Image (cartoon, helix red, strand yellow):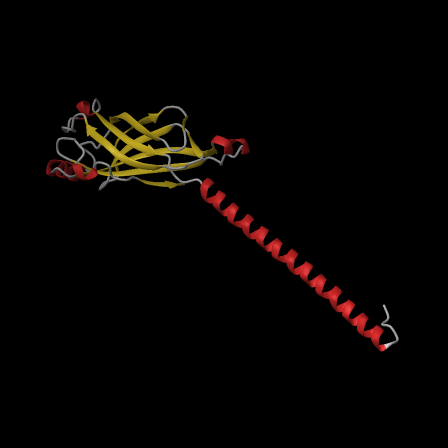
Length: 222
């Protein structure tokens, strides 16, 4: 658009053009500000939702452990012995339940890596709701160590000293599933293999030492 020929007309034209440009800038700035505010709010909301729905691994702690009869060195008698254990399993998630596969348990002599006992903790799959605690208890058959094993002398020595280091291991696979109103989203994670290691000290009477009661267990995925 060409400016008017007269001076007054050109002045009015410049004022009108400046006004139009100013309005355009104001509208553009307002739209940009609103867009940034919407993006910021959406980002904060998504971050809060992510924090609330992010799966947390279950927490395990050792409640009790006892050897029914300590190994006397006789292999025939040893095969009839059992150990009893109880582990608490806490699901800390507010909106996420946990699906477990069948859970296997084993007990190992910490200083020799020898298998002491083994068997199923849960023979079939099971489900743990959100914000709940489940107790995993079981009886395992004792299978070692035997008097012919290299670890037998140190096992006997630490047993008689009243501080036998053992490790209870739980092995399973878990999947996370949204619960409550979020369950409509249909989210379920893939299956991940999980190991739980509970290190403990057992006295000469076969009972768990006080310092190991309530001890937190390590857990990791593989």
